[in-house]
Image (tube, one colour):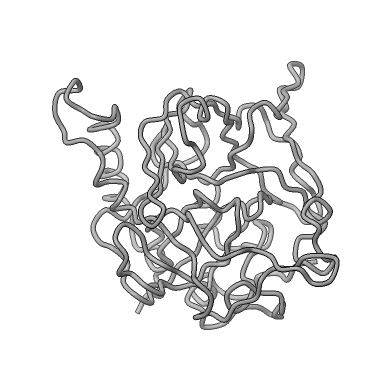
Length: 323
């Protein structure tokens, strides 16, 4: 059983303290990943409610009578050849990437998660793939929480730079609020961060206690976030403001062999290569200027820009304990 969150969100995300107990299995420093049922802060839960999982569409089936969608999941521990002491060993996984809602019918993810319109068409975007009660695995969700790709609005994938995609969904999203992007500045070194997504395809995990390690690269920054494959496309948040600073896109190797099974790679907080996060500014910089629709390179333009501006204007500081 994972440890229950026992401190305030500000203490967790600023790294001033961590847990009632500390799990020694780590990525960068302590392993800060937790399930949604362990998160008590309503602001964080609201942000998590606007994140989603990317699944192969062909693997999802919907019961027409109950309108329940069954997700293609398998045993995380056995499927990944993990040692039994590995965190979340008994859970299921199945998502191949993560994403976040940034407008009523637009999601943001990593460019390498959706490489073409055909790939986008074959993907389902699923809200609610999370452990909301201890021991209850989310192998199904209401069919209304499953969305399809209407159009790949734009993407970029630079191996040592920005990596992002914007996807227009088949219909406006109901019951989830678009996240707010930080459009005004880039994060500096030591900015406190947290991430919400699907590490190794698992149900939603929140991981804090991280900071920006290197803000100097063009189009992205390096952080010590506890993330895995499957976190690609996850929204990375500023722990002070709750605004999205970027998209998790690349990182260190996730596992190492320990005899006949695998465990998470262990790195000190300032060690290994770090995790790369595409800056929000790299996405916004590619949006076409406001003007006649026929002149826009990507059909997203003014409507999304206006929505983002309105959302940002309404957003107070996330962490009221900010010094």
